[in-house]
Image (cartoon, rainbow, N blue to C red; front, side):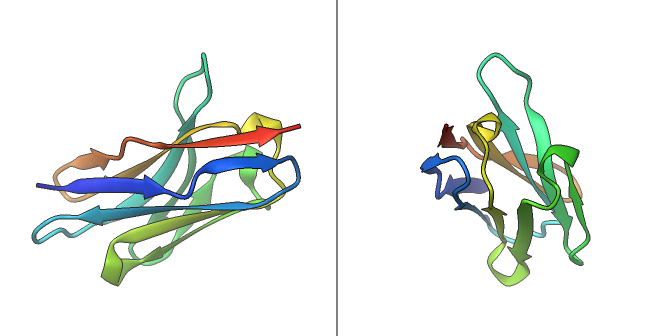
Length: 115
């Protein structure tokens, strides 16, 4: 059974920084892609950033230059460093871990940016 658990969310003032983490676990797990999504109240879930097993990254335009995604393949863990946070970054941040056959989602971690 695969488990995906996010951590590190919280409340921060605009202009501040926060790092969220996500760890995937499971027997024989081989993850190809790890990604962060977010969902603001009343809005659809959107892709924030993703990273492949060889380190290639992709970011939403709204976070380029402010957020950095990284991963530790040995630990099946992905991180999202968020700097210069804005109130519009507020939302529940979800981690998705992709293998050759399936996608696995965590339950999310709340990030709130106050103005």
